Image (cartoon, rainbow, N blue to C red):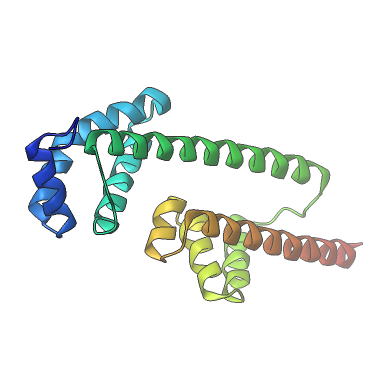
Length: 188
């Protein structure tokens, strides 16, 4: 027996590695509250914590055959902490982007466009994008799904998905500015 690990945990890990769903369920029941508590200490948002814990277990299941885990409790706790750090970093990045967007918006005068018309324009612009860009943009920005889950659905890394969204927003911003300039010149 390895130091710091008991026989039950060793059996669970080997069963998990073999793809045993009951072992995975037992691991989930044993650790989900602890992981939720770890996430909640930093985030204070039950919804975000649930999503992070769910994602940790999703990754554990996906990578079960490749993982060499010495101590399951320590491993899952570390996964959760790193997921929280990534979440906080993403939130800071989003807040910075929103602040930058607000500053840009204050400096640029766009004609007042109805929300439905703007949504139609965004969908029209997104139809001209490559498939992955379009899907990530539609699901994350228009359907308000978390970026990590959209990335997982499309089998791309969250970082790649962030780059896609950033590129799409730049393209759309550029096209909206062209439309704004065209409308402005048309009326004046």
